[in-house]
Amino acid sequence: MMTAVAKVGCIYAPRVSSNRGRLSPSLARAVPSSALHSSHSSPRVACLKPSRSKFSSSPSFPAPPQHFSRSSIRKNHRAADVVTTAGMDVLVVGSGGREHALVWKLVQSPDCERLFCAPGNPGISKEPKVTCLGGAQLDVDNNDAVVAFCREKSIGLVVIGPEAPLVAGLADSLKAAGVPVFGPSQAAAQLEGSKEFMKDICSKYGINTAKYEAFSDVEAAKAYIRAEGAPIVVKADGLAAGKGVIVCFTEQEAEEAVEGMLVGGSFGEAGGRVVIEEFMEGEEASFFAVTDGVNTVPLVSAQDHKAVGEGDTGLNTGGMGAYSPAPIVGPEMQAQIMKDIVLPTVAGMREEGVPFSGVLFAGLMIQDGLPRLLEYNARFGDPECQTMMMRLESDVLPLLLAAAEGRLDQLPELLWSPDTAMLVVYAANGYPGAYQKGSAIGGLEAAAQDGAVVFHAGTTLGEDGEVVAAGGRVLGVGARAQDVRQAAVQAYSALDAIHWPQGFCRRDIGWRAIKRLDDDKF
Image 1 (tube, helix red, strand yellow):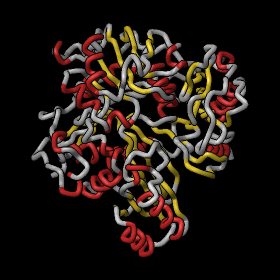
Image 2: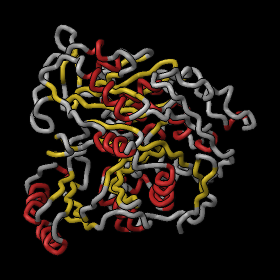
Image 3: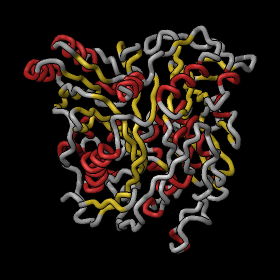
Image 4: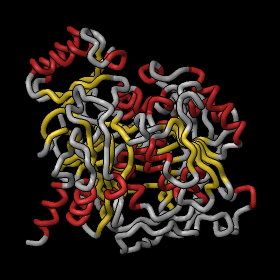
């Protein structure tokens, strides 16, 4: 039975917890039996006053408000129930632009005493309070080693950035050791780790998504393509670094995509099973919500640009830029997304015995005022996370800790800037195909002026200590301003201060929002 939900202030909490379900046979394939447990047996109902919007109109990045310190969290709670963070040491797992943005925001917290990042990158290492730990110092692929490090350093919170450690069960190992961790269990992370699992959850709990079928047999997949026609979408079931989705405009293209995945191994094990689904039209948007498995806090929207070429053309990438908020997601749309997509997912995962704790990243297609779910990610988006961290004026540490400890119902309201934040990705020539590593990058200090922020995504240090490219998406240059056009001007101005002939960027990030802004003036 589905659990009814009630909106209380800006926190959504279940009214009741009835019979907790078990995985249906179609879902059980993706979830190890050892993971079928609930970390929240007694859901609570939040009792908060209705939230009030509080914004700063300044385009600069102010110091985070102090209202999240433990002395100011509501005093009517018992001492044992108050979320405390003072003097905390934090470990962030990851090395990309998303992790740099999380570190950048976390170290602004007055309650973050020290922050370790494994493995980190040269940009992260320059943030205050930060120590980066390379592979020789901490192997993040070894769950036992991460647990031992946390015990040795008395880590108060682990924030897992990428999806791979989540799917590998790092959060489970940390929770078993009593270490607070922001990120879902291995079982719950299958919302991202298996597209079939995600679609089955949607089907069972009435979440609006594209019609689909899953296949491991090539001929059966081809027969389905011929029956459905084109355009149609072929997806690798497993993790494929954001590149396992092929939009096919002819049946031949779709059959070739299936052959490539199931026979040719184009995405390795991730493509050993495929999901074939209806092609959805509309405007894409991303929406984020933090949940502890019971209570859920909506964050904000963003839009990213997946295609490598201007005008959203060419091959898909991990993301060439993003901006927040997404104009298409206003207050009414946000409420609809929470009601029809996010909350049924949180309740459904709890009913299945695999409660999701962490951040739910919903990729959406919106047409004629109706949101439909494209996919879920079990972590913050990259580059969307960078834009959200630039807009978040509250201290992020208590938010992540409250989710980790199942106490989101005690969290004060989050404060967001009404400004637009934009991030432009600077990528290596050739990306998302073959690209060279090792080229030197100059002008980074000049770029990080006048309120701009440079997040490192794929960098390392060369032999002489200079910053060099070490990945496909190498840098993210961000700015915040009163509207999307001003944010774009500032972001591109900062990016142009960087000297890196071996890199390229799209010059039209935010074009939809800018067009909408122009249309609104007439």
